[in-house]
Length: 205
Length: 435
Image (cartoon, rainbow over all chains, first blue to last red; front, side, top):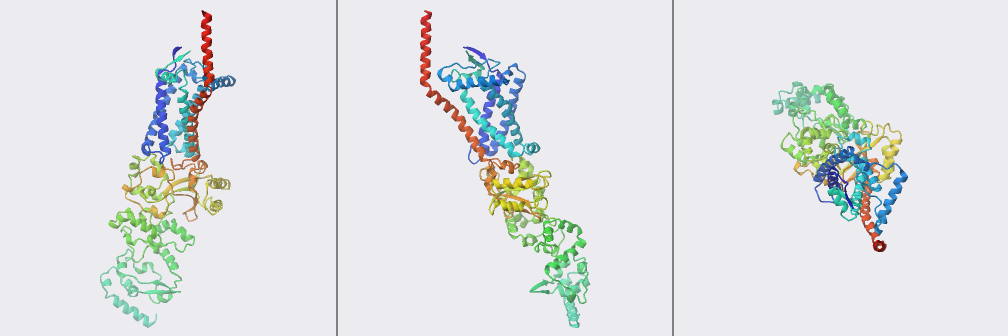
């Protein structure tokens, strides 16, 4: 085993602000949507907090974006353009999580600073960071001030279309956060990946 | 005029000249006094036949003090000739008399008359509504006071036709304030006097509220998120009449012009279709969706869409305005599930008033609402139930992944032990070989 710096400081800062922001946005989002059923915050406070957290997470998104725009480590987010290779490696990773890891097989993917994501992670993070997150930002900002952005909302098909997109992605993030946190416990020790996301260093074979 | 009648006129004139009214009213000309000689008599009336009568009684003092006192009787009744007019005047009905009188008013009050012509009252009149008011239904021409004079709450003519609404107003904070001082608003201050429009048309009422409560937008902005949107989509009374039931009215609008669609401007068959789709009951989500789709295919000039608005469920409730300290400020009142008592869809009828069709409340939460009421969304209250299901599914699937994964680990635990034992044996064999 050797210790490798997989997660530079800006990425770790971004990650944990993002994680806390997402959890708080989910909590306030549930309070806003289910006022009358959920009684944790007053509605007004939940809306104000949700809006404020939204802008924190948006600003934080640009920390991530600027870091990877100017870092050669952005290769981790490059898509695999060879579909056959992509599916072969993805299947191998699914087989590992679904069966291989239970019988002691080694993880087919060994992370390096320039290739730190396995094929499933890479694909998931591309969908999350390049599609879902930006869409959630745009729809969130539109819903934040629907009068100011009424023309854009109208072009997208109306406030209900915008809200539907926001809620569908909200559901996707609820699923993602749970699964993401669980998969984080599947390192060579249950806490290995969590510790790496704090210290930056991962133990690699 | 017979000699006997002429004698009565002269006697009455002499008698009236001795009354205090005549003595205290130098504004009444001699000519008018001649008229009042008969018309000041209590109970003076004309028989119109079929049991109908027209009161001809004029209070001399009131007339002298009225704005019309200066122009005298002949100012309006120029066609009346003192000699013989009692027999000559043919008045088919009270209504006919009022309609003729309105044309006389118009002679001097052309500007007001033009405003009246654009009103809901004039529209109803043109449509043949016999109850539609004309000038003399609201203004008593022989007692009319200057426009600047405040009307007493008890003397408001609107009450005659709109009594239940007037009573709600009288009991409201505006009505109570008006009873104490003249600066508080009365009917015409919000609805206007001559150009009165259908209450739910345009922004006249909101403008009237903001006309007096100029700070309202700023004071709401201090605590109400998306204030502009709330001001557009929620009537003032929806929150400021706390006892009112709230209704969502889905108004048909022309997408291109932003104007409400009326039965005379493209929606002639909307009512028929809505009634057919409702099938005697309320429109449900599917029938509303089908109705809109068919309507937009059926030759309407432009695409039409529904815009929702939260308002008090009736005109009476809209007038039950309370002191602002009692106004609804709890967002959950409108944003919780089931916040709205009723849902209607409306087009403007031929008289400018909305023609409403009842809609099932469940429409607000249906998946088709994304299309049918694309511009109306009250967070929480109108959330799509299908998306609630999706959220629950996402949560359950997220929880199922760790549980399922750990279950698989449990199922293959013996195999893992065997593999680990095999690995231990292999490593031991390797060490022996090395030795």
